[in-house]
Length: 96
Image (cartoon, rainbow, N blue to C red; front, side, top):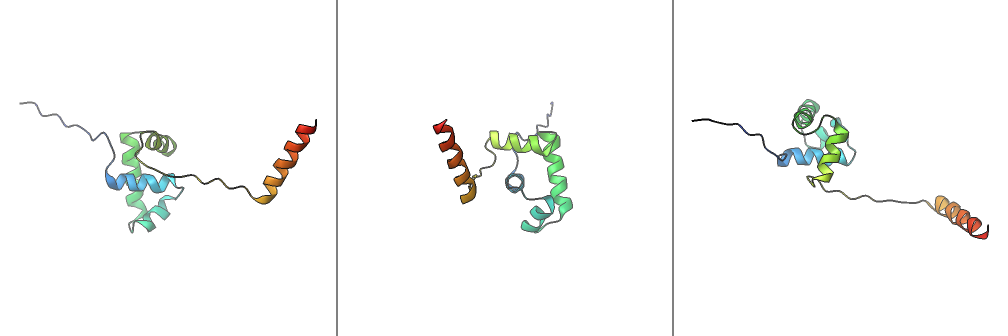
């Protein structure tokens, strides 16, 4: 009988939580604080994820978003000054 060990193709729920916090911009230390664990445990988990799926945190984040392992929302805000400047530039361009 031949036994084959097969790696999981998707991250665990805990790994997904860590990825989500990483996508949201938290550092490893901040993630450890949120999850009440040590920074070393977070670093080790991310190292395992990189070894299994992608070589860098950036590529790991891109993969997690693309494969919908994590969900997040992006809020884009413009302050009033920037908005006014853009409107003025647009008006000026329309006049020219």
